[in-house]
Image (cartoon, rainbow, N blue to C red; front, side, top):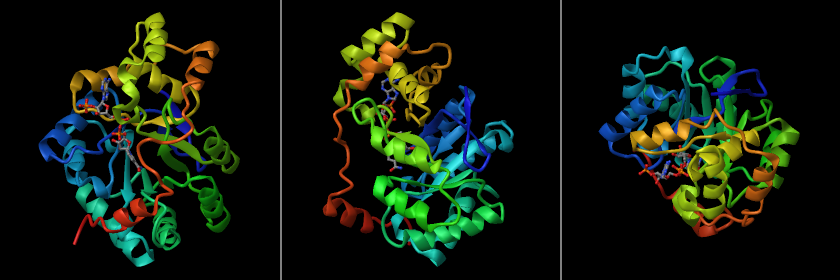
Length: 283
Ligand SMILES: NC(=O)c1ccc[n+]([C@@H]2O[C@H](COP(=O)([O-])OP(=O)(O)OC[C@H]3O[C@@H](n4cnc5c(N)ncnc54)[C@H](OP(=O)(O)O)[C@@H]3O)[C@@H](O)[C@H]2O)c1
């Protein structure tokens, strides 16, 4: 496992474990325990995943000291705004059973996220959150945020996988010193990624699967990956990417797979924005 240093000096694991779409508490708790047991130290949850409590239960049971873990959660659209965000941070801490967060992200660039960000800056300054950042802030919006706020976001978590590589977005993040983090590093299983001929063929050279090649490609670009799985064997497989290195030719082959657009979500679609505004994750 390797670490990267964020723009505020905080060390972040280059690989973590995501728990989107694991609503069952017992299953989520077990998956997080399996992940920590397999060497993951970064856990990525969100208020909207409705499983912060299960993640918290696993953190309590896992036996790894809190300071060795890196816990991320996210502010939902419903909680955009200064006062709402202050409450949301407290609610997430209570759900997780923690007294600080390692990383807190705005989940979507929607609603009064500038107000929310101010509350996050305060929590960052008083030590409740070690690093603050955003998700799904595409280049112009990220630049606007960085030009507006006092604390430059440490991380921008966006969709990044071989079929949606976003080199332009990565360049803007680099300009502002924002670390990219890949959600959906397997394209959520789309495009036949796990049996993709190019990724499979590259993997065969190193005794690795297509999944491992996809993860390795992102970490070699300096992108933090947070693959999700509820299967122990896959959780272990996905962590086993630290004993091989893709060649420049491999990286160039994978670069050719870029479609240049997402086939999972369209952040420019007003219906998607409206749908997320309507999604309530608490009373
Ligand atoms: N900020 C955001 O807006 C946002 C959006 C989406 C996701 N995220 C975060 O990013 C994390 C990862 O993204 P994701 O969960 O959407 O998708 P993903 O990690 O790209 O893909 C997960 C899918 O891949 C399967 N899988 C995992 N490892 C495998 C392997 N080695 N071989 C074959 N199949 C495998 C999983 O199945 P099984 O579980 O059945 O093994 C699951 O169906 C999330 O969990 C969440 O923490 C953030």
